[in-house]
Image (cartoon, rainbow, N blue to C red; front, side, top):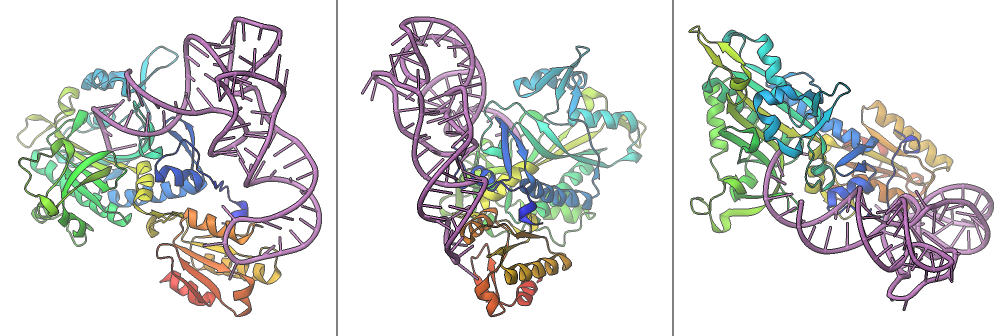
Length: 439
RNA sequence: CGGGGAGUAGCGCAGUCUGGUAGCGUACCUGCUUUGGGAGCAGGGGGUCGCGAGUUCGAAUCUCGCCUUCCCGACCA
């Protein structure tokens, strides 16, 4: 992409409404614009990041055999009256009426809809287990939206649902999802610690929140220092080996980690220097809640013994749009964002220091073509601007690599290659830079 | 929902106390000179001063009501 043709409205100064670093940087880097409290438009650069995160989440869901579908944003009130949550959910649920005066709502989550889908077509334990998910916009009319996209009212969430005939197999579904979450966050280049969590209004008795440690997080959390060095990549774990997977999950969870609601200083096994008490950003939450929805909504299946039983369910969320902010909170410096490779909107920024200079233009066009031919996502800054602004913008948007081409280096046949994260700059031939980036 | 800020040019702000018809920086447009970490000079465009009432000869400024937005707290991916 040529920057001269890209919509990238960067800001030199921070808009007054943005307080935390991720919100400031997202506005300055031209990723989002606020439309209303907690409601944002995603501009091209931000949308690319959102899509990359979404795709990694999708791939890891697919990898455990979870089926993607798509449910609507607008739901009828009747379903929620069946589950009893139409009253329980309170003012956080945005309620609307259609032209026929029917009560509708903008979905804050989808347990009711998925249960309805399930009960209409599944009758036998032989059709189980089932794992279904979608990635869809949710609306929760938060009392106080804040922190940019980290607590928006409208947000993109992956929500998955499991259906099993008994607790043991439901537990296996939970474990598979646990593994998928570890792999997802690991691929996103961030450490998300699974912590024993409160189940809140969704209900249930088995629940973990995946928390990224950050001072700006909204939750108080407590965990053993051992978590910092723990391998959470989930590599080599066989998701079809029930016992092996269960053992892996138990081993992974053996060190203490709890959110404030579940933390009890009196019984906590760690203390002193071994304990980290800080704040965190909740980026994922997994629940097993058994028959909480299947029973009132009549989602039953026939078991092997011919008896009808309510299906055992779990739900599993990842805040996709929140992750964009959370990743920035976890990875930035005073000059701007530093994207993990996996989610960077482009892998390399190509800076033409002297647009309009024949030699520079030719060298940059050549480099641009070669990078594209090598399958590398490149953002080419061909704008007619002074060098300082280009450097500043490129640092701000945080692409992992920068290739700087100017008249001085060009005279000696070299370009400058900069690593955004380390700040290291080397002067090499373009071919050497290309090799380094491709490595 | 309780407490506390803020709404003046795209963005950052001054002006409000003490009423007199709106300004600075930056960004934007034109020209010239520049060009390796946010250039210089000259010229130029851009404002329902959040909205509505009221007081006054006259309101960004005073009074009342409302709206929006941000921060802290209680709740949540």
